Amino acid sequence: MINILKQWYERYFTDPQTVIFAFILVFGFLLIVVMNAHLMPILIGIIIAYLFEGLVVRMGQINLNRTIAASFATAVILTAIVLTLFVLLPLLSRQVSELIRELPTMLGKGQQLLSQLPQQYPDFVSTQQVEEILTFVRTEVTSLGQRVVSLSLASVVGVITFFVYLILLPLMVFFFLKDKELILGWLGGFLPDERRLVREVWADLDIKIASYVRGKFLEILIIWVTSFIAFSWMGLNYAMLISLLVGISVIVPYVGATVVTIPVALIAVSQWGVTSEFGYLIAIYALIQFLDGNLLVPLLFSEVVNLHPIAIIVSVVFFGSLWGIWGVFFAIPLATFIQAVIKAWPSHDTATE
Image (tube, rainbow, N blue to C red; front, side, top):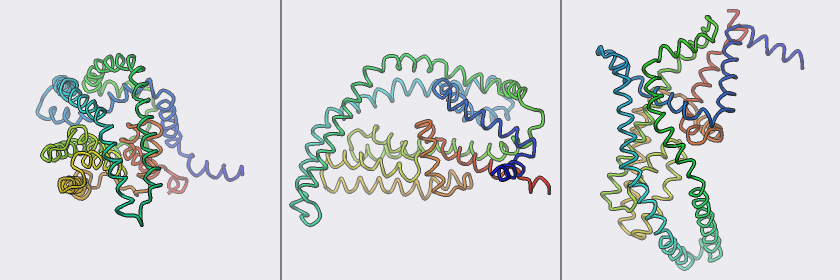
């Protein structure tokens, strides 16, 4: 056993660059895992600054001062925050409240439709199965109501913290953008002068991750707006809320679109029943998903990532369990990062060539 470990060490850790890179990876991972809750606002600020770095660079190419470019990017962020707080959130809050009030009526209609299934399809659905489904739904709705109440009681401190972070976040983004070189130089002072492997991995990842993250935000926005226009045109209730769910669903590959189909179908069937309007809406929703998967995704993410679907699903599950929605969103970039590390990691064979 000792000889096996020795051979493994000699194969992968004989290069000092490997040791340096391994230390950076382990230290960074432990820092994020242990200090996750405390570092989250800073990490969000870094992510937003990273997203707007391309805009700042382009503005610098037309001879604009970096401070002016960072100020413009911060102004865009502040505008988005103001629109979200005073336009989007009130609309979503109103639709959520209406949905909660209408939920008993929707459940009653759903129960009526389900109770008819044993009569219409006795060979496939039994009365006992319908009762089990209804019991499960009632239990879940009761549990959801209890969670909403407990959340509302415990949310006062969270709201105060949220608004404090809302003030600090644009300031952090501004200084991350304005003083990027200064901050990176300061951080680089803690690292050895020779860090070839770190530079190789970052050079391979920078373009891919930036393209993926910006493309994913653009995909969410396009699917959200397209779904909202389609649902509003059809007259679907809660169009803004449901279209937002459809947009966010693209974060989780393969699974998100399937899961969000449930609320779309439930609200449509409770509003129209199993009618032609319901069929048209489902057809439009299916068309949006088809165009997203076969046109938009290849257009936005062509050659950005090259991962097997199993690797993507495992990454979503693993990083989502660690960091929630942010882990889900960045699962593919993180998986791409791991792939780049494995590809660039020197072994004894390559070191001796």
